[in-house]
Image 1 (tube, rainbow, N blue to C red):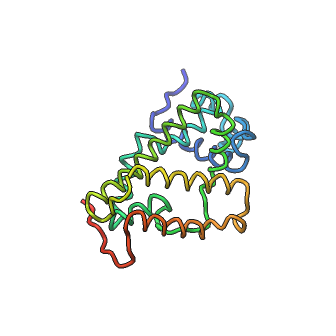
Image 2 (cartoon, rainbow, N blue to C red):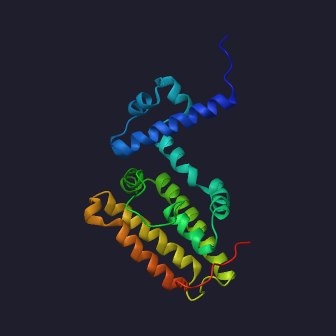
Length: 214
């Protein structure tokens, strides 16, 4: 009789596979990556990999799944604990813990673009893409809405429209980043300018006081 594998061990092994697979997708992109690449990177047998994931698509969706609905509240709480205002929270959500524009993009972005654009006529991928979009929309919209309610942000523009513009900017940059060099794209410069647009839309001035997060 084969020994029983603990749930904790299985979860750890699954996490290790996903971490290795993420590096594979970053290196090869979605279309060129194979289950064999993932097996080799994770140092797992074919049977061991298929014990956790039935396909490359399932692996990729599991990686992206970290940002889906079940993680939304946790993400808000995590950012909230390290933010001093709703503006600070918004910047950390867009740009990461530092909260400032830089020259880096999500290294997995090109693979995500391949997954959704090449599979745009696949009903499952379209539904999955819509779910991801709506979760991102909810995250940004909630922060902006709370900032408007606290009077830190102007209510001139609808919070959901501003949230959609943030997603459009990030996705647009991701498309260009997949094709252009950082020197051509000037990610930091464009992001800095976009921050100024957000300041105007939300009524944020250099001398405005930080809003209270409750």
